[in-house]
Length: 69
Image 1 (spheres, rainbow, N blue to C red):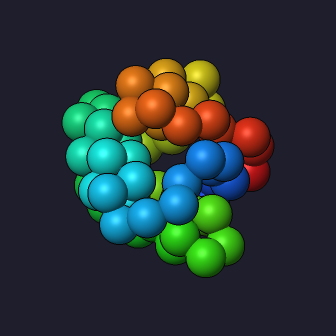
Image 2: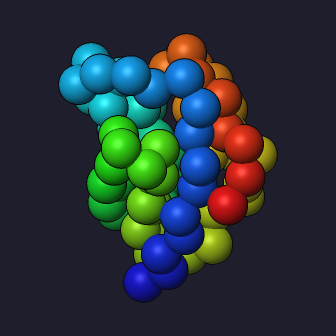
Image 3: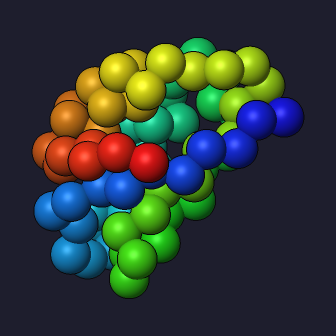
């Protein structure tokens, strides 16, 4: 298992958490997503490495911005 933590800007409420969780969960190989609204951290667990650009695209699809790890 690989765990990577990303920072996401723009999240302000529970709906934001749900939207990001739903979109990132659709990414191939992702086995778990934990979103911490307070720290703006998204912890992604996967069974193999996932390109940061793919996670960024999923976060973008949810309406938010991936700003790095």
